[in-house]
Every structure is written in structure tokens, then in C-alpha cells.
Length: 115
Image 1 (tube, rainbow, N blue to C red):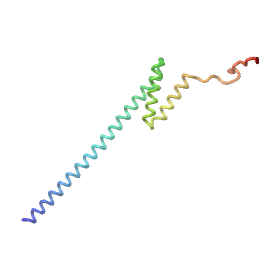
Image 2 (image 1 turned 180 degrees about the horizontal axis):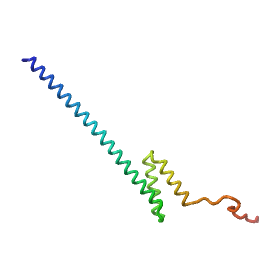
Image 3 (image 1 turned 45 degrees about the vertical axis):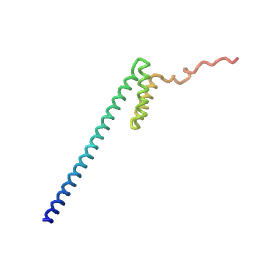
Image 4 (image 1 turned 45 degrees about the horizontal axis):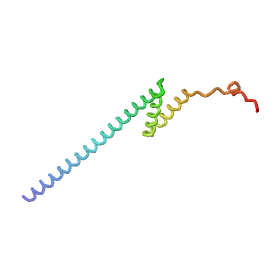
């Protein structure tokens, strides 16, 4: 009788251990899925902010454009991966808003007479 009880106890311990292992694996898997969902949501939010900021850069109102620059700056601070795209967007916007003067002899200012 004692041997049968010992076998039952051992079998119950093995089953309990398997249930604990399966539960731990399921919990670990759920955490990984949640982390991936969070990462995707953050990327979507960041892409949304980026596109809104770029839209603001194209506005006719100076205050809205400045807000777009600030939004892009915040994105560049928060996302190493998107920093190059932000810098490129800001550079293009600055270049289009402040064109370089034409080079050449016609573009040189007239010389002042010496006093």
C-alpha cells in the first residue's frame, strides 16, 4: 500500500510540475506578444507624429511651421532610428524656405568707393 501511495505522490508531483511549466511558458509567451504589440503601437504613433509634423512644415502660417520644427526635434530626440529622416526633412524645408543667392559676377554686391 505504501508503494502505491508513493507512486501516486510522485505522479501527482510530476503532473503538478508539468502544469507549472506550461503555465510559465504561456505567461512568458503572452509577455512577448504584449511587448511586440506595444512596440508596433509605438512605431505607429511615431509615424503619425512624423507625418503631422511634416504636414505642419508645409503650412503657410509661420507659427504652424515652427510647431512642426519643434515636433520633428522631439521625434529626433526620442527615436534614434528616425533621426536621419527628421534631419533630412528639416534640411529640405530650410533649403526651400531660404534659397541660396545665385552665384556669379551678377550676384556680387557693388563695390563701395574708398573713402
